[in-house]
Length: 329
Image (cartoon, rainbow, N blue to C red):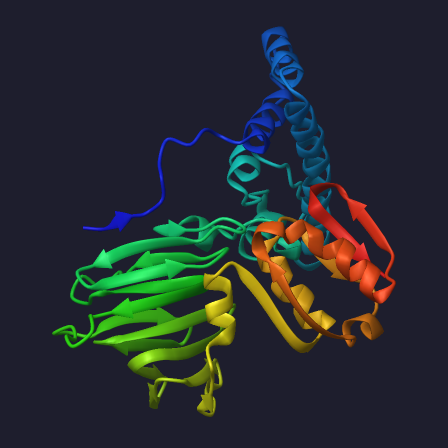
């Protein structure tokens, strides 16, 4: 049995409803009742009108992206295809177009503007800026950070999870009492096992980082294996395990408190981290800008304040597009 700490019964937000209306109006089978219904919904509030305008702009951007990718794929397979934006793709967030662009876009969404099919099919998933805690087994709890997808183990004989993408903090056992059998998490090319521990696990594509916050964690990747103690970290990927390094867990502690902390980090890394917590995408238009160092702490509940602060601090120009896409130059 699993339990979920999120409250239920929340109403659908305006953007989701707006996307439903956009899909219906562009379905090619729209009626006068549909048009009248959309107009009534838009007239209900300023928030509805803004959401409708933004959803319409996003539709145009994603439709063009699908067409562009389909054209690129046609050059390879030499098969003429079109890439319409489907109802399921638009509302669900995964762009499932026709042959050339569909598979590519579903697996690798441009600018990561929407979840991949693997993320959408996960058993547990958090949205942008959302954090969530679940109890997946007795004495095993998992805290999901933003944009994180986790699935139950496909092996019925193994107690565990698969981290599809994102970041989690896992707590196994309890003080003074370890689990009788290790809890196993698969992430990329490796496996993490723990009986009594607290650890952070982050996966970006095929790159995985493990930070042991308490207890002891075992990591295996291919033929390599290593044990981590409190305050240690290891990274791994397709090329195997990296070296064990010390870690104070500050970054993990920060996001769990709703903060982003940067210490003399290049702006390119800062923007990459901010993009995990913000809808849309911030794009730096020059390599020189990305090398600028930053020391700062930001609150996650005020994520939209970051762009104007960065622009003021570094004297950058801001160009904002619909869908939360921002260019800094």
